Length: 398
Image (cartoon, rainbow, N blue to C red; front, side, top):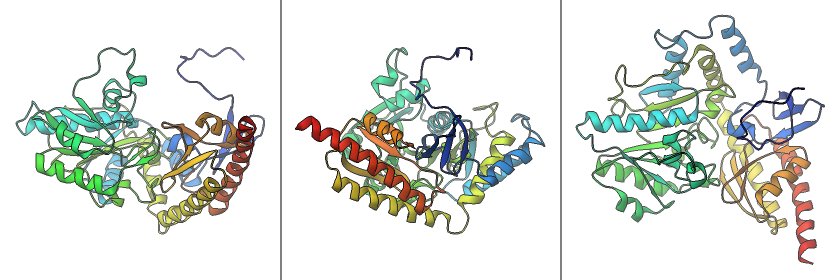
C-alpha cells in the first residue's frame, strides 16, 4: 500500500475498521471492538442502523446537491421538527459543530448590531470550554494548546473561570453581546454545569440585554437523556448550536434561535454551500424519527442508570484507578487516578473504545441504542482493564 499523504495533525491509533454493527466496530482482520466512543458522540444510533441507511440510500437515488439557491424540502421538514421540539423558531443548517458555533456567534453579534448596538460584539465564555477548531471558535474556547501558532487571537471573547458567577458579572461591559456555554463540558472533562448556574445565567442575560448561547454539539439530540441538555435545568437559550448526534454519523450541524435572536440574519448575511444538503437532511430526519419515538429517551435514561451504577461500584473497588464518575445520560466521564491515556489503552486491550478528555478524564459515549446487556458487557471490560491497572499501580507502590 502506498504511503498516505495526510497532514500529521492526528495521532491515530493503529486500528483500521472495515464495518460497524450497532455498538460494534469490526477491523479488517475481523476483531470486534465495543464502541463506547461513537466517533466522539457522533454515531448516535450506532453503526449501520437500518432506518438511517435506508433514508440515505433512498435520497442518494434522487438528488445529492442543489445548493441553497433553491428551496430544500428536507431542510423545511427537519427545521420544523427541531423548532417544534425545542425553544427555537428558526434554524440554519451547517456541516459541522464548529460551523454551527460560527453561525451562533455571528447571529448574536448581528442581533446587537440591528438593535442599534454595534459596539456589543464581545461574548463571555468559560475556562475549559471547547467550541471548535476555526479561528473564532478556538478563541472562544480560549485553550492555549489550540491557539498556539495561529497568529493573534480573534477579538471579542472574554473568558471567566468555570462556575464563577461573580467573575461572570464582573466581565460584563457595554461591549458584551452574549454568553456562550456548554451545559456539560465534554472535551473539558465531562463537567456538568449546575442547573442553578444555568438558571442564573438566563437571569443575567435578561437583566443586561444579552443573548444566551448553548453549545449542545456534544450534549444535544438525546445524549444527556433528554432531547436537549438544557431541559434538565428548565431554562432555554436564545441560540443553540447542534451537530454530532443530529446526523447520526453523516456530517450535519444546525444553529437554532428564537425569532428575535435571529432577526438580524436576513438574506445575504450568512451562507453555506453544502450545509443542509438533501443527503444530510434525509439522515437528520431519520435520526429524529428514531429518537423522538415513544419510549426511546426513557430507555436512554434507564440504560444510563445501569452504566452509572456499575461505574460507581468500580470506583469503590478500584480507588487507585478511578477517582470520580461524572456526566449525565450517556455522556459519562471517568476521572482517572492513573493517566487517562493508560486507561484508554487498557480498555483498547479489552477490545473496547473510549475517548480521552481534559482533566484526566475518559469519556464513555456509547450509541444511544445501547442495551442494558451491552452496557453490562462494557462494564465487564472496564472492570478487567481496571483490575490490570490496579495491579500495576500496587506493584509500583510496593
